Each structure stands twice: as C-alpha cells, then as structure tokens.
Length: 212
Image (cartoon, rainbow, N blue to C red; front, side, top):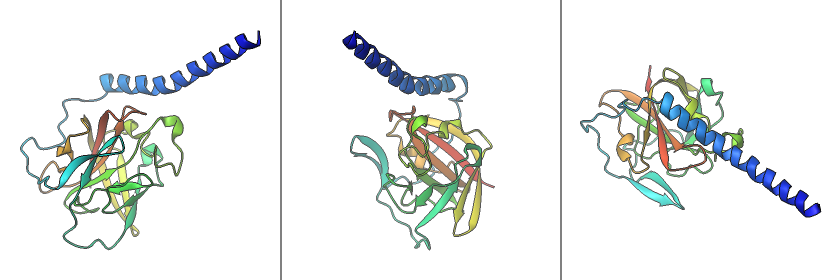
C-alpha cells in the first residue's frame, strides 16, 4: 500500500510538472497561429544598415547575438531603465554597451543609444511565466509575448523619458542578425529581443517600437 501511494505521488507530481511546462508552450503556439501576423516585415528587405561586427556566438548552450562594435562617442551613462506599462514591467535596468544579460538587460554594443537615430537593440532572457518575479532577470521578458501593437515602451535615462510605440512583432531564427538593423535610415527605433516559446530557446521574439 505504501509503495502504491509513493508511486501515485510521483505520478501526480510528474503530471503537474508536465502541465506547468506544456500549458505555456501550447498557449504560445495558439497565439502564434491565431494572432501573430507572419507577413509583417519589420526590417527593410533592401538592406540599408551595416551589420559588420555583429555575429551569433554560443554562450554556454545559448546562441546569442553579440557585437564587437563600440560607440563613436562616449555614453554619459552606464545604465538606464525600461518600463512597459501594459505588462506592468517597471523595474529592469539596461546595461549600456554589453553582451551579457544574465543579471540585467543588455544594450547591444554599437546599436543606437536611447533617443538616437537608428535601432536601440535590447536583449533579455525569457522563461516560464511561473518563474517571473521582480528582480529575476532569467525570466524578465516572460510576458513579452503578451505585448500588443501601439503599446508604449519607456526608457528612463538619467531622468529623461524616451517614449516608443510598438509597431509590430516578428519571430525569427536565433541566427538572424538582420534584426539589429533599423527598418530605415532616418527613424529612431527600439527593438526588444527574447527567446520563445516560453521555457525554450529555439526561436527569438522581436518587438519593434518607434520613438514618438
């Protein structure tokens, strides 16, 4: 009887863990089929930006876009903060000129600084939504797939607010480095990148916003 009870306990635990992983994955796939606009083009099909110096490298078993570029002018700040009101995300710090996003969000070296012309390219980790909590940068973008067109993304730099409006989303292969480019040569854009589906790193979610 005891052995049977232990077996049932482990079976129940296994089913519970499976549901915790499977449900966010299935919810994401449903969103991808029903709501995601696969024909949206967020990068100019006629390449207008330079992607020299950007590459994909494995950090552990994680393929990440990294940059060997640097800024032509010195940034007067080391970090700034990001807020997405619609997702109630108002605590993450973004480290400037960094390829590392284990304990923060990272502004890819050589991409635009907030408010500048070009593309402010910020990378952060995602995970199962159950793991999301304030201060956990391993799951900071867990709810990013819930963002909608026209949602606001704010960057706070030394008290200066830069407000961007979401123009669209895109799912790409992890090795697609074209997403670091802005859609055109004159606009002031912001791109957020994280892994999808939740808990996996097989694809990348790209959120593109424009300064207004």
